[in-house]
Image 1: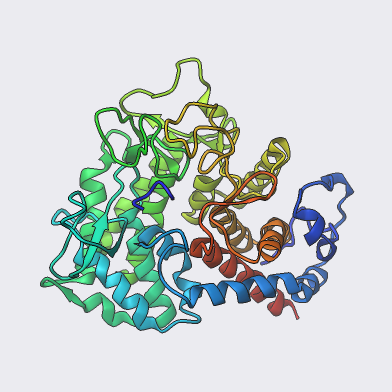
Image 2: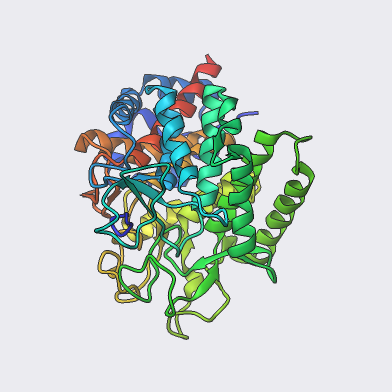
Amino acid sequence: MMTRRKAIKTGALAGIALAALPRAISQSFSSTPASARADSSPAELAAQIRADSTLSDVRRMAHDLLKSGLNAGSGYGQVWIRDSNTFIEEALEVTPPQRFREALLNFFKFQGDNGDVVDGYRHGDPKKEHDARVSPLVPGFLAFKNTVETDQESSLVQAIFKYVTVTNDKTILDEMVSGVAVRDRLGRALNYVLTDRFDRKHGLVWGGTRADWGDVQPEDSPGVVLNGLSHRALTIYDSAMLLVALNDYLQLIGEHGSGARHWTRVRDKLKRNARKYLWDPKNRKFIPHVYLDGSPFPKDFDENAIYYHGGTAVAIEAGLLTRDEVAGAFQRMEADVRAANASSIGLTMYPPYPDGFFKNPQLTKPYTYQNGGDWCWFGGRMTQQLVKYGLVAEAYQSILPMAARVVRAGDFHEWWSRDNKPKGSGGFRGSAGVLGKAIAMLQGWAAQQS
């Protein structure tokens, strides 16, 4: 985001000698062929996880980082909602809840009259940055919004749900911001997406064309704002993020809450449409883009050959795949990592977009930044979903290369090259948050087996 303004089964891979792998796996975690793996019992797997000191070290490192602030990373001065949403749970384990309560309320203080939510905010002088959003409720701060993606509103709803779940502080929902309660502002945020960023024909969320979950369009540089060059498209990431938010919002308001019946219908229709229009049953994958205004790429380019790792992980979180499809997704991600000679399932996509397809120099070349870079920020989310779906051996397998390189580098980095070189911002809290939570889930499962 340097471009931003800024019944448990052990699964098919259980037989690998997991506890012995972290160092070797840091280069290529899938080097052991599946045919060489024998089954191991849940008790044996649990013992391996409990004995793995690397996991404990990484979670401790995550907590140390998350204590130190709310900005996205050492390379960012801003508090970003899409980042905060992914580390809030782990951060609340080690920081006072009031810190996050205030930070989340600031997003509502910048909320637009139409319900839209900004990406982030930071200290600044509005006289020097005329395109920033200001609010008299937050003096001395400026806010910014990248309009090519549609995940800000969904991220804020999800973050509020996580805050309430961890702290049990439901009073935040009744907090008044400019005379409107937070619970109502959450509804306004969801309505903004359904009104301003929703394609009625398909019943799905639209945004600019991007590389999977990224926030950069190919047509210009930096490529973070919709303009006359943009090509609107439907993507699984944007719609899956809204699905997760709707599930969370329904839990916040309760099944008998005001509007619950309406929002349930919205969610169910969105879920059906995501499968209908974005899922490719023949290839068992999500279609990268369904274009509304034509594609920015050459006509002979087969974009559907690309498998989006990050959007798939969020789709799994949204409940769009069956357990067998989740297992298949992990197998595909493993195969992609081998084919790319990459290091972890954090690989954004495979294959990446060819050289020159994106004008922003950060992702013009394949395997850079959002165009095939390796991000724990999403690999860790996939690990979490594997645990949720009972694919615990696969989850443990997937996290090992990510954990090993964090320990080796002594830091959480924004993304990694194929040969495991750290790239982008250091101290990247999103990576710390998702890896910390994934480790907590693995260790929690292992504790239940003893």
